[in-house]
Length: 294
Image (cartoon, rainbow, N blue to C red):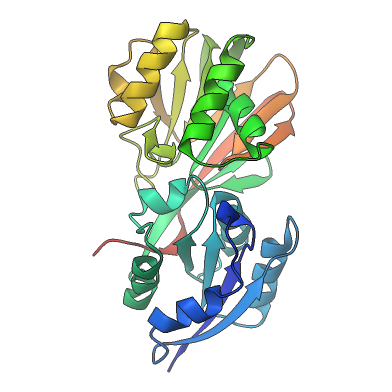
């Protein structure tokens, strides 16, 4: 019996034409195991709608072909649905795919689908929005917003924006309630980590795991220009915990109280949300097709 499979393709992820992607996928996909259908998104929110339709039509696998934003839309509808999420990463950061060890090489990613090794990962929910990789506020939310509207993609554009936005950024004081314990912190950034990295192998929380039943709240104290450069280097070499102004606290439920409403990011997508944020963890709530042998 073949697995009824829907490939949801974001045609603008990564900036390259996706017109011939279905044929390229079929060239490698094991069609003796999978019965594939292909659909392209045409607007924000469309991937979520297509996933809801796939659930109604009894699909057995939904594959996101795109970046972290596309995957967030799809995965948010698959939480507790007992339908696995497959990933062919074509975004600019691909944080979730990298943490799951899904190859960045297109053909190898399809071969991971063929192996169909399913595992369960934790899911986080910020107010009413699910996320799977990383959320944050402060400096990284500002950069996420700027990156979304930049004409260029990739690591070097992200680095350029980090440099440009640093001069005028003003840190904020946050009140954090971590499993009932109150902490007040003036911070350059606050990240809520389900996985270890933002994307592009930039590790803000190197020891975080998608499978351990807890999240990490990362705070970085206000810093100067030289310290920002050092932090960037340490994130790139997966030694972020060596930075003196970096702190991680593990928790299962978190409330964050900000002075005002403001920007945040969820899986790299910039949003504006209320000053009070409530983050919950749902253990092993999403099935995924992993990239490594398990």
